[in-house]
Length: 344
Image (cartoon, rainbow, N blue to C red):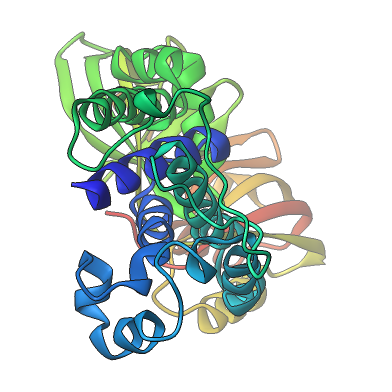
């Protein structure tokens, strides 16, 4: 019973303190909360690590060395690689879980030797009758309060807060922008869109891969065609829910041309990043615009178009640019966005 209480208290306090309810953070906090009771072979952690618990049990009183600030410091020191090479929150959660657990034990009748090796028993509460006993009614009340705190923490911090969670659920734009901005550098981000096509108002209900932003709107693809959201785009979204996907990176490269054939640069880019999606954005001056044939389609984004001698691109696929600019000499500067993997 006490193991569950310690785990719940540590999980709730650590998650609230760190603002994080991820499984790894909670797992480290719970693990840390169980470590003090490794000094007895009858505990849950003691049974799991019987040789270690039996060795400690034979040499130290229960709730002494493993329930001390000395043990907390030792755990923080031994787990320092978590801080250096993995995630600082996991490191904090581990030793903080231990600290919360030993502090909560000061409210029990026996107390703990927080300042071991100084043989002083630390007990909270002046009235001995009000101190907690294992399995007693008081522990159930503490457990219930800890569960409530953990539930509150989970709903507060999963997705970035209660208000943010509600905003994300109902498709409020600011919440979707936050999800995109926080994840676009390290993950594919998807948009679950309900709405209609701008051209003929036919319904749209599907999952799209977000390639990037164009002003305040998104440029998305269904794996076949590319679209822009908003009244000036091809899809008017009545509800758009952003959703982080698999880990992936994207990098933007600047390509500069000075009256030269761009195909050499484009093909070199394709060879450098084989099987990686590459999209081009920007304007180029071309020497023979009349030779570039582009048929507009109102149902999809015009990723390339010609205006006078200017060839304009917005998330134009590299393959399409190569086909359209074959034989052209161009001047100008454009951006190439390279994804590490294909989203759809």
